Image (tube, rainbow, N blue to C red; front, side):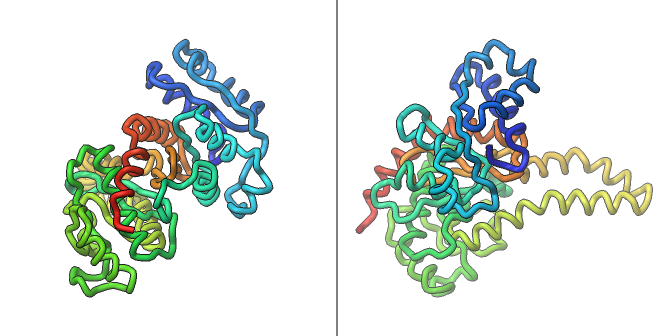
Length: 332
């Protein structure tokens, strides 16, 4: 029931994922049953497909946590929300993964409370894949923790490395600490201390990286606190619409500029696809005892579909179990 276009986009995206999966998994649609059935009815041909019809079910949940709700208060007053019910299904081993485009704070809090943190994880973190000139890299933290201590940044680096290794096939991911300079002494107290911890760790630490280096693809994991990470992520989301607007404006200036824009359209479309959040679906919450994938509030059916595939892959590759084993190797 979460997201700007829920439940329509969620139901359609889920059914499309089931059809494309060809029986690999089943989806449980959690929320207000009458609303879900109404949307399924609107997807008559898709929902009626034999493979789809046999691989989805509905779990009633009458409460809805709105985007403006306080996460902590809402979790207490709306215990029968689709977020709470869905996560309890996973906790009780009736589901292998959970996805939501709803209130990010509520999903974060509920995932931590219901699924629980992995042993010795101080703070779960949100990771977000961002494109580079080489291959995608993972930004952690992308918004879960505004204020962080050095040991949290070390945990983020480890969990991010495990995720990149598992999902992108990088055998020894390169880690960079986002900072205002390359020198070891640069940054605030937390980043200076984190540099020392990362340098002493067994991670493939490349040192500090600056904002201008992020898109070069020199590192596979970028570590920062959630305040910086979320600002960076939201800025990145604005880039595609900025380019589209600039190209359209240039095309209006003359016939020549319009022809140039038309010739460049194919190349630009390919670049924009890499920058489109819908292609990545959602961001994983790392450090909880399970799989929780958080989608954008503006998630379309395409984004929902890709988010479900991301969750499936995370579960199949046992990312949570690998993090649980690796985190125990960190010094107390």
